[in-house]
Length: 112
Image (tube, rainbow, N blue to C red):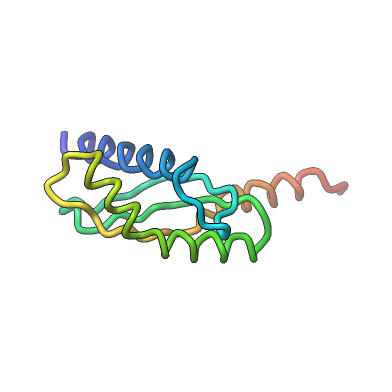
């Protein structure tokens, strides 16, 4: 039961952040960012937010820096939209799953 509740909290946070990133933030450092997953601690003190960024390493670095700068705004958005007993501290982490998948696909396409 508790696991299902945490999955719902994670998904709610992911949706709020995705909506905010889709149109409310105007920092020019933001690239094309997708929130891929959220893992919240059981005590709601922290949430690790996994993001993918379309582009090169510079775009990734710039986008993660912009997310860090928008941390307070995004946390405030979560606080105002979700009825949680506390608002978790957000930590943004680059999700390299897409990079790994593209690398595997590239290797599979190479002639033997």
